[in-house]
Length: 253
Ligand code: PGA
Image (cartoon, rainbow, N blue to C red; front, side):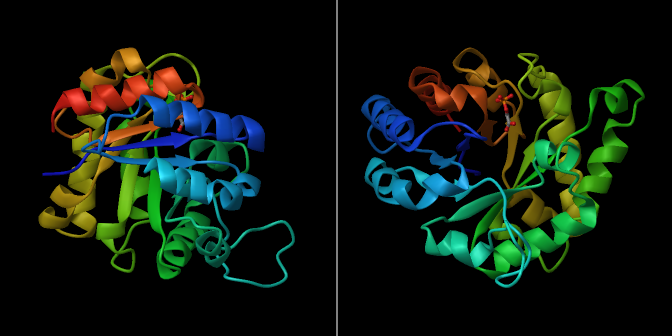
């Protein structure tokens, strides 16, 4: 049985004061001991100051990106070791905004995943097709390539979560239907089984991301291969994020 995992990707949003207030608001709405895993991914500069308040709220802490070296002359970069030092347990690698706006490539992401795992972090590795790729019938080819070019025997499967985030659904309000998410995620699981084995693939969690909100969370997470959500915009609103958490609990897995 895979425990559901709801993660909030705050992207480049919130001041420290706003972030503290949001954590308090979420905390006030959380059920006691929710039977799911929860984490938020603030911008780098907010990580260290939020480590304690998040711990007190029972919410995990992760970063949105990292570099693949542990230290050195890499101006502007942040290493996995630094994230551990700031109190992070996990990191998102390969978000579509990093692939498509910041130009990150498969080989780079493979090094990032290895470096993050090597430093003791858990990884959320994001995959997803663009709209033109879906319309051209290339969804499976894209997902397969993104799985195989980054995950391998050196990336320990028990510390990796995959997030299926169709690019056309991110920040657009156009959520994938539960059937579209299920179909893609069952396919991703098959590909993961080819990288590792079917036991590892069955154990690995695959989140859905892309315009998840309180109103669609339960139906998405009720799908057999949807093991949680990676939430952008709605994770910045306490009521919506708490509603997504309730949706996950109501999915009853
Ligand atoms: P969204 O973003 O929920 O705002 O669509 C999801 C993500 O980018 O992780």
